[in-house]
Image (cartoon, rainbow over the protein chains, first blue to last red):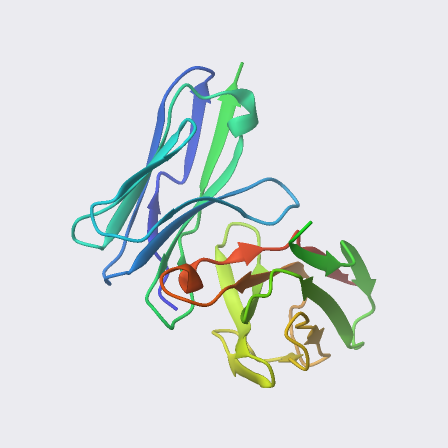
Length: 110
Length: 115
């Protein structure tokens, strides 16, 4: 499958700062998903987006499904130390397997 | 609790031995998937199954085999033909109906080390 372009590759921020990461693709997707993975654990679904233009929040997290259907972004507001981890985007076209980004590694200092 | 379980969490094997990784789900999901994750890389699809008794190869199926005899179970066998089997293996599942069928939920993973 196609690998998505996820950026930035890593971020090192202070507690309380806002974070933004994004994912782009050359293909159109019907679904965009954002996951968080802690070391040695499986990815946990954060937000699922199913419609172009959709903006969805989950606590301090907000994600949007791009209008072109080729991109998505994830924002984290007021970061805290437990936000540390690797964040993955994934795009899906109906009936096909997911395509993943390589992940954004987030480090938060107190 | 509904979810996906993978066992064991850590697995060590000698080179040349086949090994089977377990994946069970009680979410009543139709589709199940196996991924491999290596450091610095994203997830790569090994095999997937959309229905019992049917499965398809993913991007890196060589050296692996699967079966899907029951809806809730999708074991993965790493054979001796797999050249670089040491990795973190993740199982996932997804339900039916659009658009939720595209949303995959992951198990906790099995770290396989071949010595």
